Image 1 (spheres, rainbow, N blue to C red):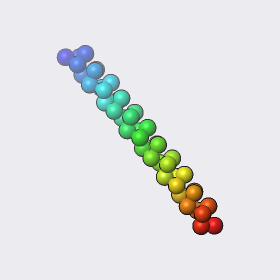
Image 2: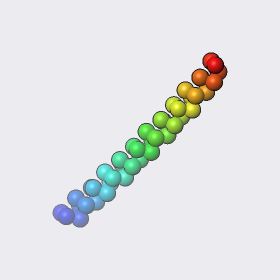
Image 3: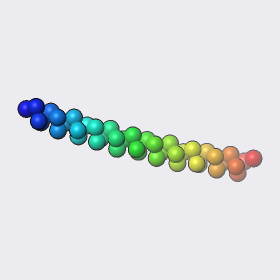
Image 4: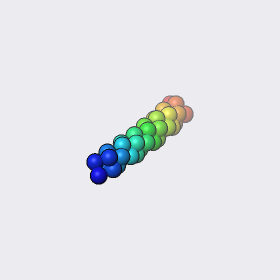
Length: 42
């Protein structure tokens, strides 16, 4: 039982890390797009 819960925790940790990376990548792409648009306007 203990090993199963520990496994569950590590799986949740992996999922959170993946989600964090996806958010970071989306944020960076958004930032690049915004700066590109601003450069085009000004």
